[in-house]
Image (cartoon, rainbow, N blue to C red; front, side):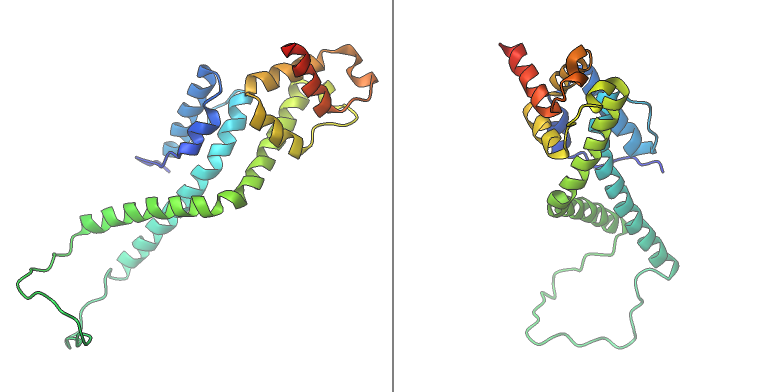
Amino acid sequence: MNRDSFIFYKDWKEAIKDLPDDIRLEIYESVIEYATSGNIKGLKPMANIAFNFIKTNIDRDAERYMSIVERNRENGKNGGRPKKTGNKPKKPIGFNENPNKPKKPYNDNDNDNDLKEKIIITSNEDNNLKKEKNQNSEIEKRFNDFQKWISENAPNVSKMKEPFTINEFEKIISEFDMDTITETILNMHNWKPLLTKNLNANLTFRRWIEKENK
């Protein structure tokens, strides 16, 4: 479905701010293309990991938006707002109204604007409420992409006696940028004694970085 606009969350920017310029540009363009047209172009492995994190939010917002549009369409088929009856209902006791103040006429544009504001507000509220719940599933998806990337680009690392766990992966991405992570794993893959020493992937990764820093 083609859309003229979409919501861009601040945490998306935070998630990719440390990536190289060309990777960030690729992610930004993919986000715009997917959010407005639903199309996805081929992404580099590093960009794909970050994009999948964003794609989950885009899909959820699009689904919520379409459900609201469909509901309003059905209401329109049924005649829209209910017609007023001949008997004027009594006002509640204590209701005060200024008789000189004209009532605001019904305006479809106002309803459309209210709907858009409600979609944005509801989306932000839902995002905050579900953020903690979705965090685990998003980390799991990123971890699966990480494992796939290792198996395709550094298979020796995936064959280690003690490969990376999801908890170790979560700590790694919070401490190091993607360039450091991918470069270190590729160096580990090319190290000949890797598979003969029955090493732990996470400890080897951290010791490798410590050695490089020294």
